[in-house]
Image (cartoon, rainbow, N blue to C red; front, side, top):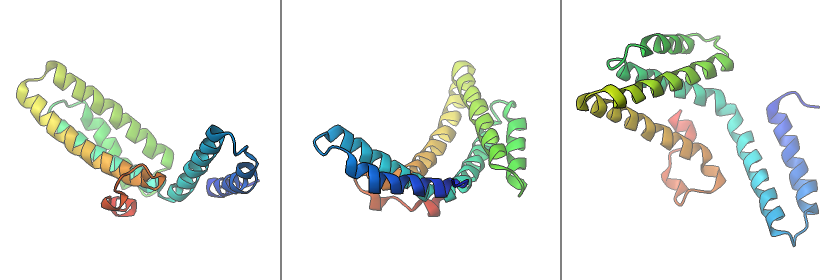
Length: 166
């Protein structure tokens, strides 16, 4: 048995492609389709696995930037932003620490955004909207590039390579 996820995925893909897919009843279109979807999803996971940590670091950088911009509207982000920046600064930060900082900044940013729309004036809402939309635009582009190999994009060649976005 393989301990590393990349090798486990390769083994699972090989079993699906060489053994399971050929054994699926060709007359069962749904089973054939689902088998191909699972194979494609696992192939994408295997291809992206080496980039996952870098993707998470990039997300944390962007959330730290967003929280810095939103801090003017609510000081609650200051501590979370500082903690996120500190995680990025440490070369020894684990993927678990990185993910915890991402989740914390997502949660607190969401609370600040909700409060700005609930309690803020028009200028606050406009400012928050500007920052959130800019962040969302970058995030959507990264996510579209990340999943482009699945084949859902009408013009995948128009997307930058994920490696260039990270």
